[in-house]
Image (cartoon, rainbow, N blue to C red; front, side):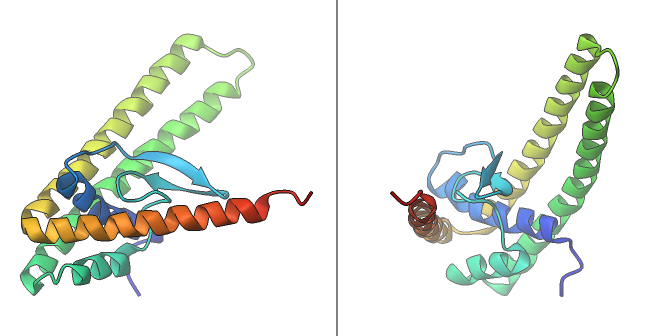
Length: 177
């Protein structure tokens, strides 16, 4: 069992998945928080429902491109470093959310303080996003162009599968007439 919390494993797996999209598809969309069926997660290129799976997903992705042991070691180190940095940033974000809750619980809300806090939250999110992108770019340098293309195709297939499953779930959730 991994010593990393599930959320950090998800970040690692997502970063690997996004490498393919960011590099092989040449277009990178900034990850954003989304909800699907009551489950929240990061979504971005190649990860329509969330970046989930952790180290096992990372290993599967590396298996799918026949990564060498040297490549695996380098990418693991990159992702573990990013996970540690993002863990600290996650704690900073939590502190900002607590400040927001305290601010909005006051009898009179200070609009200026709320705006300043919003700007701090945006800056913190930008810092996290930059760190995730840097990890993905660093990992992409470890893979060959052919491996990135294979990974991009794998991610595309997973995205199509996810979309098909999402449509099926939506149909099941429709009220009976």
